[in-house]
Length: 138
Image (cartoon, rainbow, N blue to C red):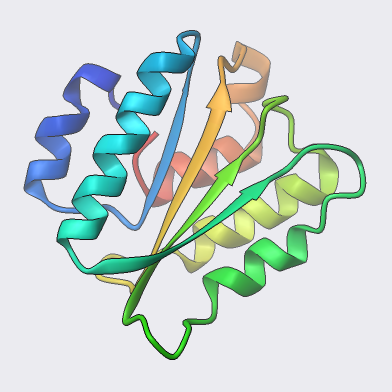
């Protein structure tokens, strides 16, 4: 589901989606939106947070997929945060993002938060974007 950043707080009050894709021109607004999602996640019991920054051709996408599938001994719920500074995940990243979207289930113990800069129309029409938007909130 695609919503404007201004509608995010109302959506968070209705409950957490399993996946959030935050993107836009204003880095400060994206960070504030991410803070709101993180706060809602903490309130819902997501005590563990793992952050990945996907930059460069050698980024290990399998680590992101593995993090989403495993919990530590001390946390019942976790947040996996993925930052893609370029906004272009590449071929391997596109496949990994589609797998993350397929694994996202309402009520899941893992919340996935993906942060990107402004995405152009061609990028937003990609299969990975459509999969993320369908599985969560974009």
